Length: 473
Image 1 (tube, one colour):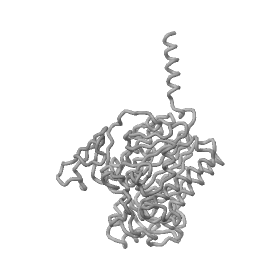
Image 2: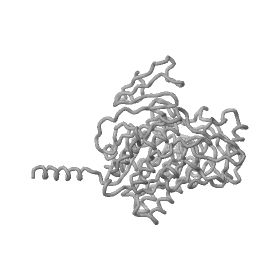
Image 3: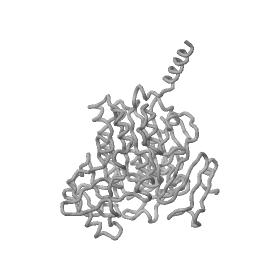
Image 4: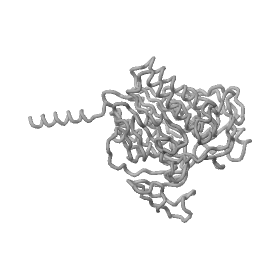
């Protein structure tokens, strides 16, 4: 009898502390900015020269994390880590990013956020920048080895020859459609500065039958471009598609939970944006692109309210890596001089995009789930965006498949506003440079092709508890 009573009490206790996940699976909206800096958002930086009222309101209604870290400090490896819960340096891509016609980076059968949630009954949609490689097809009579290094570096002629050898009528393989996404609308690479410059809908490249090799307005790279492609309107199109998905899903499958992944291009270069966004910041065109990102957040939120989905939707907004320090002149590459207008995009953190310093990978992270996440909270829990896979697993109450998300640690209690113990060490990576974070300590290793200090083997050790700016070695 004593044993039965004890078990009964334990059962009641377990049921009491289990999140509502088991009874009610929330919709999940993940908005992933591109190069959004820690200092770009007003609720992180009161001195920001960019108004971000929608993101600020989201933070006031939910929780804001001050020690969140992208899985890498550049695009492709960061996105791989986010979707798979696994560091990208474990793959064939050890540095840099993917370009143009390179094959899929996410391995067939690899568990992703979308494929995991799909098995839990979710309907998953992608609207935005993919940049994780795709399976393209060569035209008959053209022999292209997509797994071999393709000749981008020598100049425009080899690149043009390869580009004109792609069969644009062939269906994409190995992309998001085979990795758990049911509804897709996306661009292949880095939306506005990597070809093909076109939208891809459910595996089909749109309007490429009359594609020409040209340089879209504002870009500094040329490529095969659809006749209706407009750089300035890419994120507007992504946002419209996301809003339409929310409304259509509500009309056709209201009882089915959904996962919407919205990886926008803003404020990545080239710094061009929709006419209605120009002049809305005091930080140049890049600042206006951050404003457009905030506008997109507002559009999605309005759709959730209109469809009565707000209360049962977990909304997360974060970034793939740190920022550039300012706006670029149209058509100029990222290594050229920047126009800042006095805006501090990294919020005083050392470094920027492409570096293992905090400015390269510490990113804004805001989450809202009404009545589940306490409003107005701020958390200093340190975590990596690889942790979202394990967190979503915890959220829906189902374990991950064996071998999935090996670098993912659930931070669900912290997301819900609770205190958590220190996470196991986080590995920071940028090209060939590495750093490691354990508790308040961060070690930056000196080795590597792009070592942070010239003397081989030398590095830095920082106490981030007192020195977030990494000034005292």
